[in-house]
Amino acid sequence: MTRTFRLAAVALLAATLFAAGCGGAGDSGEPIATTEVTMVKSYRFDPETIEIEAGQTVTWTNEDNFTHTVEVEGEEDHKVGQGESVEITFDEPGTYEYVCTLHSKDMVGTVFVM
Ligand SMILES: [Cu+2]
Image 1 (cartoon, rainbow, N blue to C red):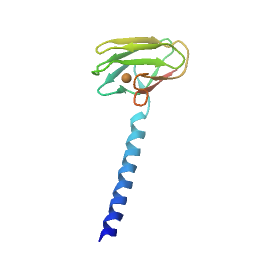
Image 2: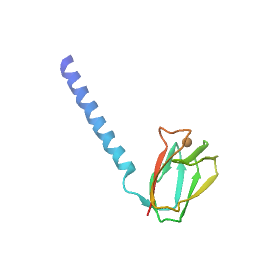
Image 3: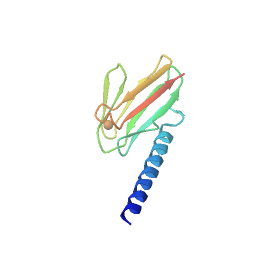
Image 4: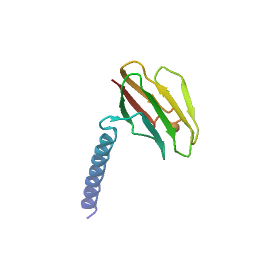
């Protein structure tokens, strides 16, 4: 009786982990063509991966209840308070990873500059 129950529990755990893995892959998905990124509740960039043309300016707007930052790799960190926004212009084509340095485990994003 006990052994049967344990096997069922293990199977359920495996199914849950599998589902979580699929969800995570779907989130990063295809890049969205936009110059607007919102810091939505809670601790997320939306959309996480965007695509722009060289010379365009991306605006990050903080609609979360916490202060966040935008730090494109190798450049200065920009603090963005609640209700504020920051604009960064990308002149050179390339792939730019960025992060909120206050929540770097949860808040990361990518800008593809074509
Ligand atoms: Cu943050």
